[in-house]
Image (tube, rainbow, N blue to C red):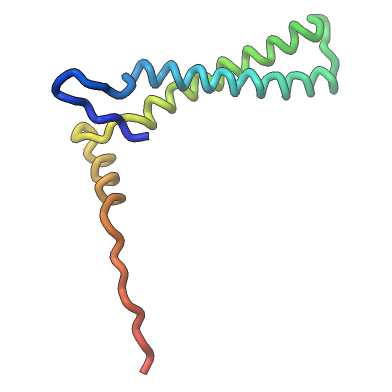
Length: 111
């Protein structure tokens, strides 16, 4: 998602890096909770809950996977949506190369 253009006169602005971080953490946390529920439920049915009981064991699976996936998703969302500017010349050059029109050559006809 490209960043929204900033205006000189105090108009709308794009989300800040902290907003992107929060959004990635919430999205990753919710996906991690769901995955923890699925895999934790499967492991509890397969191997049993142990001494902690099924709900506590399922909660442990869900919180562990939610925290892990949320952490990595939050970092990835900030890195992914970083604004292309002159600060990172390699990324800026790659972006400009992608925006160039493609060059098409005609096929040679065999004599």
